[in-house]
Length: 420
Image (cartoon, rainbow, N blue to C red; front, top):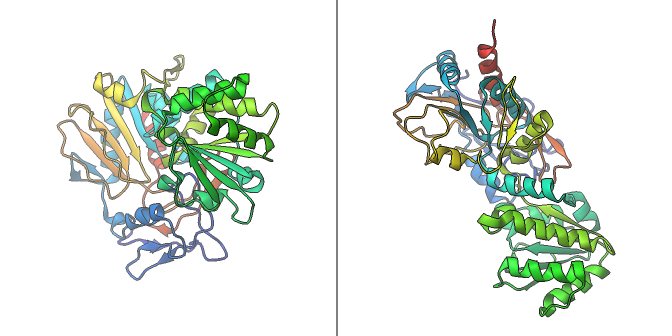
C-alpha cells in the first residue's frame, strides 16, 4: 500500500468530467480539484451531498489497515479469518451491499457458495418497488424524457432536493415552459419552474384513492383540485409523476406506489405520462439489477449452489432476520459511506465488514473482521445504474489509494472456499 494517496493520472479535467457515485442521479459534469493536502473538492458544483461525501475522503485512508477484533492486521490474515467465519456459517446474511455492479456480481458468487441471504441497506424501498413491479407492472420514464418532453411535472408527497440536491437541474430544463405541481406536500424551494401546491395536509392514501377513482372510473369526487389537475394532465404534452418510495408511509408504501402506477396507466389511455421513482442510493439500483440478472429474483433472496432459490421480501428483511436471531454470520458491505453495523445485530454473531476506510468498528464479543475497501468513483473505476435504471454509467477513479475493491475481496473469499 502507498504511504499516502496520490491523485490518479486519469483524474478528470474540465474536458473530461467526473461522474459522482454518491447519489443515483450520477451527475457526470463535475470537475474534481485536488487541494494542497491531497483532499478532493468540487468547487464548481453546488451539491451539499457531494461536498459531505468528499469531506470523508482523507489522505489517511490508505493507512487504514484491516483489523481482527479491532486489532490491526494484514490483509492475508483478515481474509483468512473472514473465510473461516463464512466456512463455519450455515445461514449467513450479506447485508448493506453498498457497492457497484462488479461488487454485486462477485458477492452473488460468494453468496452462492455460502448459502447466504442477500439484502441491501435500502432493502425496504427496493422491496416496495419490486412488489409493485411483480404484482401489477409499472410504467416508468427517464431523466432524459422528463427533461426533453415534460411540460407538466407532478411531485407526489416528497421534497426531491432534500436527498437529491441537483434533481431539478438535471430533470427540468429551465428554458422549457414547464410547470411543477406538488401534491400532498409543500413547494420544494429548489424547484426551477412555475410551481404550485395542493392538498398539503391530506392523507396520501385518501388522495390516491379519490384520484384513482376519478381517473380510472370517471367517478365524480369532492376534491376540485384533483379534478382540475386531471384536466390539465389531459391537455399536457407529457406529464411526469415524481415520487420517493422512502418518504411514503412506511407500512404500506407498496400500496401507495401501486396506486400511483394505476393512475399513470389510466392517464395513458388518452394522454402521455410516466413515473420516476427517486431511489437507488448507495448502489441499490445496481445491486438489485445485478442480482435479478443472475438469479431471476431481486434482493432478499437466499442463493446456494445445488439448492432452489428462495425469495421472500418479508422474511428476508435484514431487521427481521437479526431480531429473530435467524443468521449465524453477517457480511456487511458499505463502500460509499461509513454505514455502521445494524444496531439489532447480536453481539455474539460473527461479522465481516467490507467498509469505507473511515468506519469506526465497535468492540464486539464475536469475531469481527474489518477490511477497508475502495469507494467506486474515488479509489477505483466501476459502473452504477442511474436512478431511472435506463443508463449504466462508468465511473473513473479520482485517486490511487491502493485500496482493494469489494469485487476483489469477494472473489478472493470465493476462491478460498472452492475445492482446490
